[in-house]
Image (cartoon, rainbow, N blue to C red; front, side, top):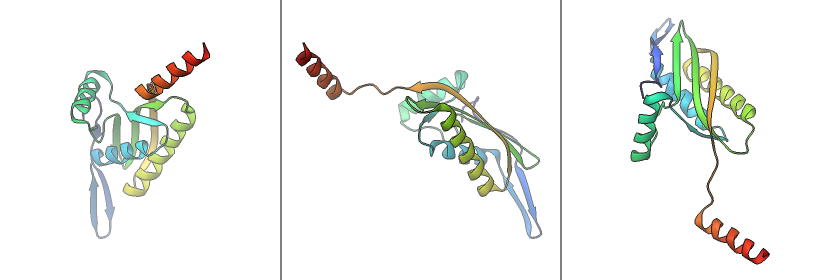
Length: 148
C-alpha cells in the first residue's frame, strides 16, 4: 500500500456467543479492490499524489499492482466507508461503471465481513484509450493508400 492508499482506523470487532472475530481494515481494502477490478470497464485502480506515483512506478517495474492500490478504507463501529480511485476504459458509461463498482463492493464486503458499508466514494481520474497495435496501424495505412 502506498501512503495515500491505505486502510485506516481500527479493526472491526464482531462478537458472537462463542467468541470474537477481528477484521483488519486492510482485509476490507483487499476485498474492495478485488470487487472493483471484477467490474467490466474498470481498467485499473490507481493511487493518488506522490505515493500513487511511486506505487505506479513500482507496478510498472514489477508488473503487479499492490492489492490495495487505489482503495482507502475507514472502519468504525463495524461500519465501513470506502473510497476508490480508478481509470476506466474508453467507451463505457462512467456512471454505470461507478454504480456497478459501488454495488459489487458493498455486496462483497458485507457478505464476506458482516460489516455495514455506509458509503463507497468513487473517483475516476483517467480514461484508458488503447493505442493501435503495429499491425492495426499498417492496416490503416494500407487502407488510406488504397483510398487515394
